[in-house]
Length: 178
Image 1 (spheres, helix red, strand yellow):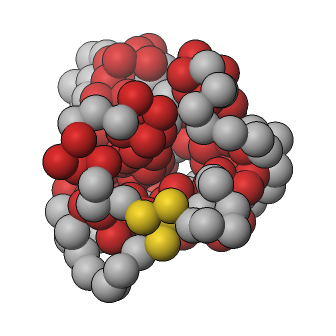
Image 2 (spheres, rainbow, N blue to C red):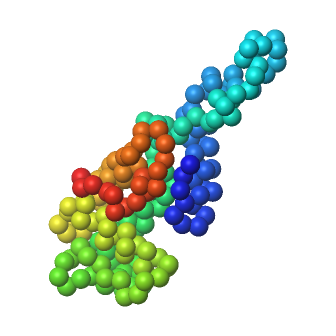
């Protein structure tokens, strides 16, 4: 089961897993699962055991098709928005909310911890940017950051267990450098 870190992510994550299972899952197993008629299934297979009620694991499907989970999509899009805001200084109203460190140009300083966009995105930025290892966000190409970030999040997502989800699959502190 997916562990929820933010309110509302659990339900969206479950919906995403159902969609991935429906689109990329084993169709033959799904179709045969509900053939319970005596004429279509031998009597020894009529008993509905634990296998009948278990669903197909989605983590291998996410890995095979390189799909980011909902929680990692949130991280990906938040990081990319901050990158574009800092690079292009647009929209100016949001850009002015971020304070860049005088010591390190890739470090953002959060004025106060809160649950709003600036504070949460600052935390995401400061956790991921050292792992991406780019020198300056102004001179780095957006396509490079997108590709590197997606690969970083996919490697995080596929870590720990190849079959089951774990809270470490979404823990940004566990990201290894690319």
